Length: 269
Ligand SMILES: [Zn+2]
Image (cartoon, rainbow, N blue to C red; front, side, top):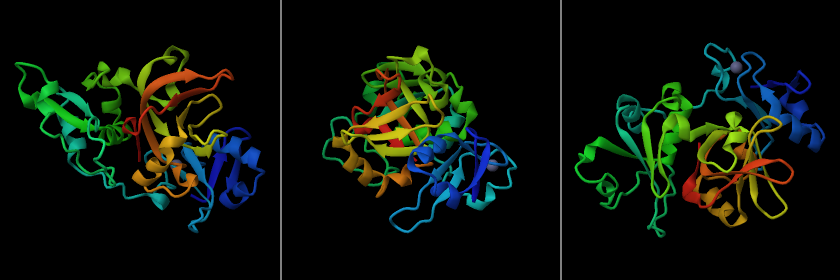
């Protein structure tokens, strides 16, 4: 996408011109971008060190937006886990983390998780093992992005050591975060419009809008996050989707954020 509209000043910018804005202005305006045609949520990505030119993108465009075709990514969304979830709305979903397997490394975020034979233990007595499906965070995020039906479903999701929720209650889009979510443990998700390093070395993933929340990745996790998702430059994070499980907090300055407690609680697409 060559151009995007900024809703702060209602101006349409070409990517080259946007890239030349003073840094503070650019940092502010990139959180308020929409597709000039369909007004879908948009992002700006600076030129990367690897030579990619500055550009805009929008995810998703509205159906029928003519600007969508120009940037459509092959997201490799096929049948499999996603289809399972949508076709089995009565089944409980058990969210899998790699608890207890610290030496197991998944370089491919989509690689199947080895359940290590402990799958049935969460289910409890008397329930058929196939009455629950084990799914990973990345699969859940994909479903949230793809399916409004999933986002609003009453399907039960079970999170080890936390509890049981309905999908509709547990997963909160970045833009829907409200005062009532303060101190609440939820799955917060949505598009990252910019990422920057803070003074402590933590990586901040910002969502769009003035008051929208951010995700804080403490410095100790940054290298591994970069490896896991093959990130070389924080600019590559603009336009990705994130899902993080954690407790929403508000800083003294009024900034809403969730701090990543462990890398198993965050996924990116
Ligand atoms: Zn569009």
